Image 1 (spheres, rainbow, N blue to C red):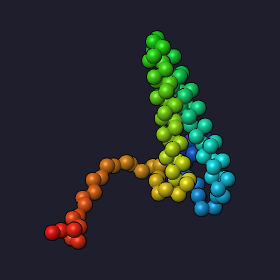
Image 2 (image 1 turned 90 degrees about the horizontal axis):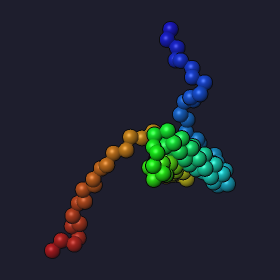
Image 3 (image 1 turned 135 degrees about the vertical axis):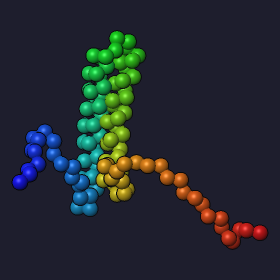
Image 4 (image 1 turned 60 degrees about the vertical axis):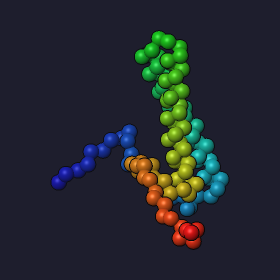
Length: 107
């Protein structure tokens, strides 16, 4: 009988049912989510930069990078909430689309 370990600080990933949300609920979630992730990234980047670097430029760069990572995560969640088919757990791959020649323009 194998039982999954329970971690109180980590909950399983669950997607929000975006079809049941009203527009105002969607925008409230998006605003809250963006501010939360941007702040978290800013604080983590700032804390790590204070420990690792002496230069003010390096500290500012790492802090901005952390805030950018937070905004990027919020952007992916925003695209999902607004109905764009993007999954936050998808492994991103680049694919090149081959265009077929149009037969009506050939001479």
